[in-house]
Image 1 (tube, rainbow, N blue to C red):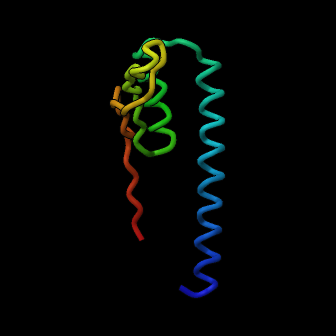
Image 2 (image 1 turned 180 degrees about the horizontal axis):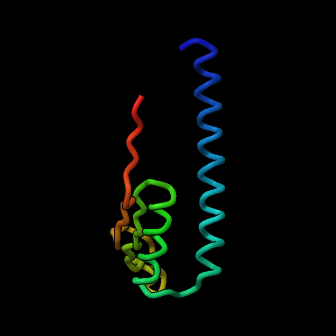
Length: 95
């Protein structure tokens, strides 16, 4: 791999990390503002986001188990899909 490719790879990773971090901060703030909502409301919001962005939105829940030496403490051992929202319209680009 030549130096230009390495530099491009580093830049790509840095931009990807920045976008990921910004997404988590914004979505975390959004979730805090919403508070507790029924699943139907969360489904409607997820569908609106999927339609707006044109991509699939998946809501997941954490699967938790208690820690053997401290039964009052839990750790995440996996994730389970709660619901999925696909965009209503798909766009086809013709050249």
